[in-house]
Figure 1: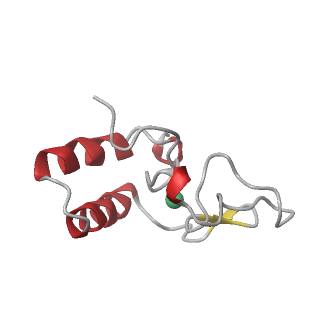
Figure 2 (figure 1 turned 30 degrees about the horizontal axis):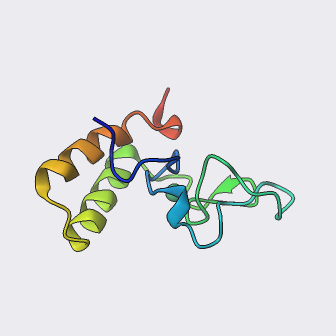
Length: 90
Ligand SMILES: [Zn+2]
């Protein structure tokens, strides 16, 4: 089952890229949009929080989805999906 909503998601935090008001993070030149990471996670070719761990990313997503009123079983599935994001692959 796919996390909701469908479509490309930030490969760091799992937010849908379509919900990023800035249209994605920026690469090193400061203007090219990243297709992988959102503007909250990635700026000027670097992660805004380089020391963020996958566990922190997961607990933030949990808080965000709970605040949005997403049902717990759906939240569970989304949390597991975070482990598959590119940033958290070794
Ligand atoms: Zn992100």
